Each structure stands twice: as structure tokens, then as C-alpha cells.
Amino acid sequence: MSFETIISILENNWPMFLRGAYITLAIAIISTILGTVIGFFIGNMHTTPVRKKSLKSVFLKVFNFILTCYVEVFRGTPMIVQAMVVFYGLASYGLELDRFLAALVVVGLNTGAYMAEIVRGGIISIDKGQYEAAQAIGMSHFQTMFYVVLPQVGRNILPATGNQLVMNIKDTAVLNVISVTELYYQTKSVAGANFKFAESFFIACVIYLIMTFTTTRILRLMEKKLDGPDAYNMAVNIRGRGEQKI
Image (tube, rainbow, N blue to C red; front, top):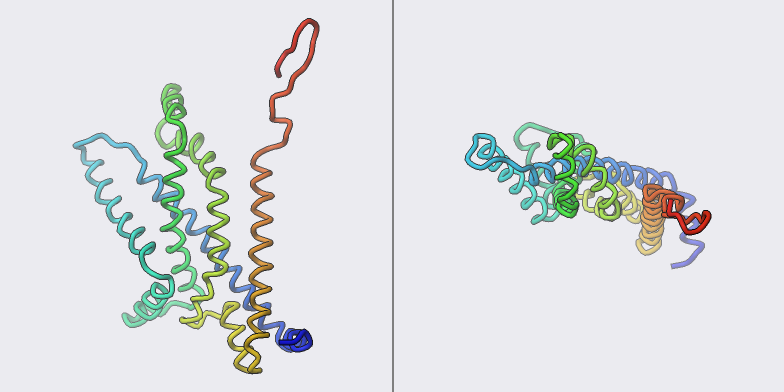
């Protein structure tokens, strides 16, 4: 493996690498957003309080059981198998999905299964006193969740969400089994054409590293932005005889 060979491969095939990186990022970002929305919905459903021995409680138990089955199935099976089942399984029943759409469905549902548990843990971690305070001023459960709890949960789970996005960028490589033209698929095509497998996949490694590193840095900046400026910290102002905290 030589530097000259790597440069030659890049010069001759950069559009394919660029197209593959674009498809990889598009699938990872869109499916992470979709999975986060699913995770917030399921996490909220799993933590919704209901009165015992009521019709609503029966319905909620059945619905939560279905959601739990979904979470366990997608967390307990490999994504590569899920892709085969969704794409080829639905096609066998006459429902032929576009490969890009099938990729979004598979990665989005897989992400949603993991995010559901992350969100549920984030909701449980919020102090119960905040729920009681919200109820004391007449807020409904929906208002409490929307205005008090979920904004805090969103900030608390941001590192886990970012980690899930990084994982999705890498895990899109398994979608080559349904011929999605993401980065791994394009790299395999380039390597098959020039028989330079080590050099071609070295380029892919560098591109994956650039995407994941950049994504991580951007998410770190978002975390700092959500934390607010240092001016939010308690300051001490000396006036007259003593110290007054402001």
C-alpha cells in the first residue's frame, strides 16, 4: 500500500466516495431523528401514570406490551437481518420499497428501540418533586411532560443520542446487503474495479473517521450551548457591610 496509489484511487473515484459518504450521512441523520421521535413517544408511554382497574389502564397495558415486543425484537436481532427481512420480506408480499426508504425504515426503527430505553431512563431520572410542583400549580400530565420534564430529558440524553448517531454512521455499512449505495458499497465497487482492496478501504476508513469525528465535535458544541453561558453561575457582589449573592 503506497501513498501514490491512494492518491490515484482518489483522483479517479472521488465522486463515488463522495456519493457514498452523502448517502451514509443522510441515512444516519434522518434515521437518528426518526428514532429519537419514536424513543420519546415510547419512553413517555412507558412512564405514563394511570389509575388501576380502569379501561384506560387496560388499553395502556396492551399498547405498552406491543411496544415492549417491538423494542425487544429490534434490540435482540442484528440490523443486517432486519434489513433482509424488511426489504426482501415485504417484496415477497408485493410491497417493494425503494432501497433508500427501506434503509431509513430499518435504521430508524432500530434506533427507536434503543432510544426508547434511553428516554425512559432519562424520564425516571428527573426528580419527583418537579412532577409534584407541576401538579400543585394545576398542570396536567401532558403539560408537565412537555414543559418541564422532556426539555430536561432532551439535554440529559444528548450525549447518548450523539453516540447513537455515530453508531448509525458506522452501522449503515450493513445496508450493502440490500444494495444501498452507501460508503461501504461504493468502496467495494471501487476495490472490485481496481483490485486495490487495502488502499480503497483505507480511504473509506479515513472518510468514516472524518464523519464520526466531525459529528462528535458538533454535538459537544451543542452540549456546551445548551449548558448556557458562565454568567448563569452564582456570582458574589460585595456591597456595604457584607456579601450579597446574586
